[in-house]
Amino acid sequence: LKGRNVLALQVLCWGSAAYLEDQDMWWFAGISRDVYIYARPKTHIRDVQIRAFSSGLLEVEADIAVGDAAPICGFLKCELYAPDGVAVAFQAKIHPRTEKKAVASGSITVPAVQPWSAETPVLYKLLVSLPATAAEMAES
Image 1 (tube, rainbow, N blue to C red):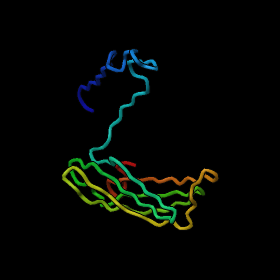
Image 2: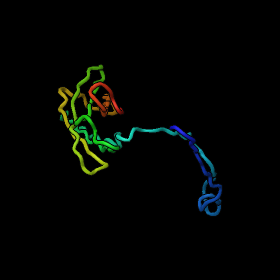
Image 3: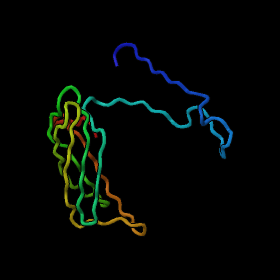
Image 4: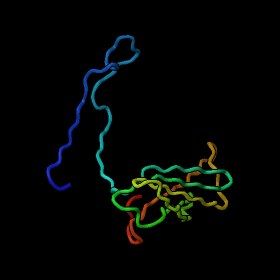
């Protein structure tokens, strides 16, 4: 971002969980995991919920944070990749909910779906993208 930017981090050394009284484990204060910082466009995908059924029905619902303007395209682009690499594309239509939030929903029936089991784990990949315009993707 332009201008002076400050990133501040406060690590608390003592809290109610930091003492050893009546504890069966050691509690360490500080940062115990990797920390990342990232930026998103003002209009972006907030959350995606996917429901898959053994019949081959795949339902996609997404919450979209709307920035200064409503999304230019009225759909999310969804691409489902089968284990053999074959892709099936479909769209999830975007509906405005409030001034700052929209939702998208769509579904497809996948022909000859291969169900997952512990004995034969079959994994599909789903790519959900929010096009800013027809030529570019805002986020995926």
